[in-house]
Amino acid sequence: MALRGKVTWWSTWTNRVSGLVVDTSVWIDFLNGKPAATLERGLENGAVVLPPVVVAEQAGGAHQRKHREAFVDLIADLAVHDAPVDRWVRVGDLRRRLGEKGIGVSTPDAHAARCVLDRNAVLLSRDVVFLRIAAVAPLRLATD
Image (cartoon, rainbow, N blue to C red; front, top):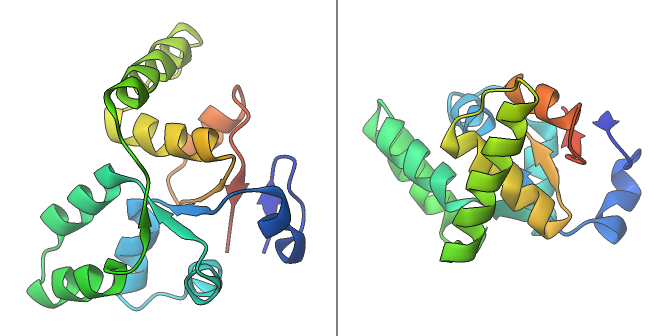
């Protein structure tokens, strides 16, 4: 697995960060049968953390009932990142700061990024917007 940012090796990242935040793009591919070795290792190690907005996106966007049911069953025992009001204020602050740097980010993507930053975690995503965020913020990215 290749990592971008300060973390450079899978075998040590769990000692340096607090979890693997997994974005909707990875869940969609995983539930459609595409390989996701990093996600699978994170699930095996109990390291996966879900941003609440990813739960809503995945449950609401599942085009097949079996995918929604599989996702809901899979996440039943996973950690869900807290989302109190002050965290949502920080999500808005992040969107504003990124916008000032010319990087437009949706609220769901800013929320996922904020969860990673707040937890000192690593983000697993296939969405290129996070590469742009990582170029200007201390967002650590994992790839399969």
